[in-house]
Amino acid sequence: MAKILVTGGAGYIGSHTCVELLNSGHEVVVLDNLSNSSEESLTRVKALTSKYLDFVEGDILDQQILDQIFAAHAVDAVIHFAGLKAVGESQQIPLAYFDNNIAGTISLAKAMERAGVFRLVFSSSATVYDEANISPLNEGMPTGMPSNNYGYTKLIAEQLLQKLAAADARWSIALLRYFNPVGAHKSGCMGEDPQGIPNNLMPYVTQVAVGRREKLAIFGNDYDTPDGTGVRDYIHVVDLANAHLCALNNRLKNSGCRAWNIGTGKGSSVLEVVKTFEQVNGIPVSYAFSPRREGDVATSFADNARAVAELGWQPKYSLEDMLADSWNWQKRNPNGYRK
Ligand code: NAD
Ligand code: UFG
Image (cartoon, rainbow, N blue to C red):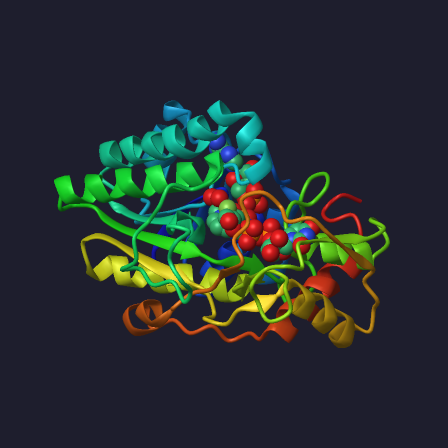
C-alpha cells in the first residue's frame, strides 16, 4: 500500500484512476484547481469505493500548496494528470498551455525534489509521435513536431522529464502515451464531462444520442483508410486507469525514465465507432460528412507490446464495452456532473 498524490484527480482519467487506486488499497490525495472538473466527481469516487480521499483545491503552479501537501502527507509517488487538453484552444491561448502543462510539470517536479519524492507517472499522449511514422506506433519510433501547441507541451514535458531522470538517478518516471481514452465506469456514476462543445468524438456521439446536439460532423471521408474515415485506437478509461497502477508498481522497482504506449493495439474508424454505438445501444446517431479537421492524421494506433511485457498490463475491454459504458454514463447523467 502506498500514498499517492494525484494531480488533476477530479478530471476524467484522474477520477477513474482514483477509484482503482482506492480499490487496490492505496491512499490518495488529490490536488486539482477544478478548472475543467467539479468536486462532484470525487464525491462519486468516495461513494463508489466507500473509501476516504483527501482533496486539496489548488494549482500545481502554486509552490506553497505543493509544499504543504508534501509536509502533511508521506507521499510515495505522484500521478500527474493536471493540465489543459483542448487542441483548438491551445492554438488560441498558447501561454496558458505552456504555463499549465510545461511550467506546471516543472513546478511539481521541483516540489517533489524538495520533499524527496522521486516516483512519477506522467500523462503523455500518442500525439508526441512523428506524423510520418506508420501505425502500429511503437516507443522506439521517433517523436516529432506536433502540429498543435497542446501536443508540443506534452513533447516538451516528456523531454524535460527524460533529462531530469538522466541527470539524477533518484528519479523514476513513467511516461504513459495514451491513445484515445473513452468509456466510463461500469456503474454509470462516473464518466467524461467536457465543458461546452466537445472536441473529441466519443462525447460528441453520446451528446447527439442523448439529444443535446443535433448531428455529428464526421471530419473527412476521403482518408486512405478502409472506409475513408479516420482510424484511432480507442482505449477504455478503466483499462487506462489500471495501466497507471501497473506503471506505479514498475516504478517502485526501477529507476530512470521510460515511455509506454497505452492503447489496445486495434484501430477503429469513425464510421465503425458510430455504427457499433448504434448497434450496441439501439440508439440512432445522426451524422453528416464534413471536411477534414486540420492537424488530423488518417490512422493512429498503438503497438502495446512493451506495456504488456514490462508492466504486466493487459487491456480487458472491447470497443463494444467502451461504447456501452459511455452511453450508460451519458443517459444516466444527461448533463454530466451538473444537476
Ligand atoms: P481533464 O481535463 O478531465 O482532467 C485534468 C484535470 O486537471 C482537471 O480536473 C483540471 O481541473 C485539472 N487541472 C488543470 N490544470 C490544473 C492546474 N494548473 N492545477 C491543478 N489542476 C489542474 O482531462 P483528462 O482527459 O482526464 O486528461 C488527464 C491528462 O491526460 C491530461 O494531462 C491530458 O492532457 C492527458 N491526456 C488526455 C487524453 C484524452 O484524450 N483525454 C489523451 C492523452 C493525454
Ligand atoms: N472526429 C469526428 N468528429 C468529431 C470529433 C472527432 O469525425 O466531432 C474524428 C476525428 O477526425 C478523428 C477521430 O474522430 O478521426 C478521433 O478524434 P478525437 O478528437 O476524439 O481524438 P484525436 O485522435 O484527434 O485526439 C487525440 C487525443 C488528444 C491528442 C490528439 C492528437 O484525444 O489528446 O489525439 O492528435 F492531442
